Length: 390
Image (cartoon, rainbow, N blue to C red; front, side, top):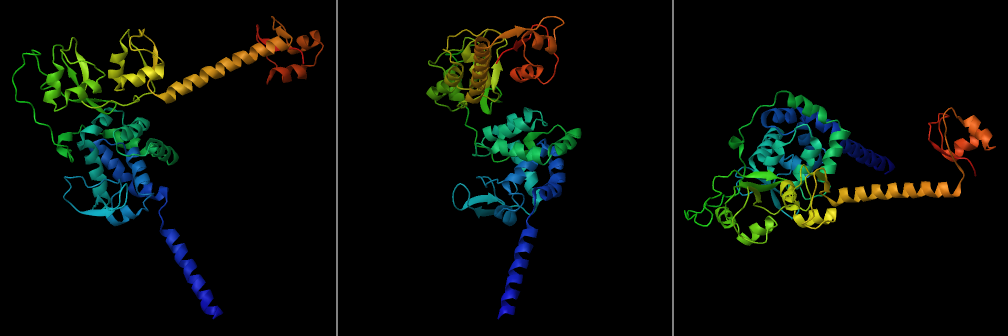
């Protein structure tokens, strides 16, 4: 009986050791798939470091149930246009449809095509392919993941496992990509208005290319264009178009303007913006794709506040908080110095003075001067203030 029990324990132990041995480490995942990531960067322009960081996260270092049953390395769901193999997997909801691939290479290719083909990721390819932090934040802003810490996780993976080296390799001969050949499940394009009545504006926004700021679609509308015409041609309710652009009334544009076709963000793509010239806060909000009310809130301003060239404007509450903390620390340090001056005898260092002569003058020791003034060397500078009493 004891012998059987021992054999059973040994069998279980061997099984557990075997199971653990089969679990892939992050380093093994990177080594196995780095060439695919570099290949895709050369083919489509998606940074290899970002691709590998996403793969590590989405597959749990190659060990997730989803990747094992589907070769899906990037958690891409089926979408309406996907007609190939699929599996069901519990994610945000139970039994969701995820794409399935014959091998990892097919998954890596589809990941690149997916990012290139979806118009809301287009702004990413205007970023420096070696700026992995901007890419990580851009993916979150474009809606790739719902986890607010998604960029931080990608950045940590890239830095911890030195993934940037693979982007450096991939960037050496990146081609110019014709993204129209790699389109993925694009949303149906609203039909253009067939009306030829331009009497209200004298111009139309038809034909204006759609661009992206901070991940949101906009057009460069010309002076004299009607906001109603823009709303009609883009199948957007006029009241929503006004709201998207922080405007209160319909009318004819008096100047060339950025007009957003989507709701802007509460924060900017950067932490702050430096005004290049005297410009209205509304224009600054449009340039940065941030809602005007939040721009005013972060900077404690009113809409009609004049902004001079060189003014630093905060585009996120984090940046505002950090600046406030820095000011608070500076004020505290100033107050602390004033308190020290008020409660201690102070001496201003004169030319040719040293610690020895100052200590002798005030009948204290050199060690006391060092301790009271947190000195790490005996070097003094002219004009330096020293505490010379208890």
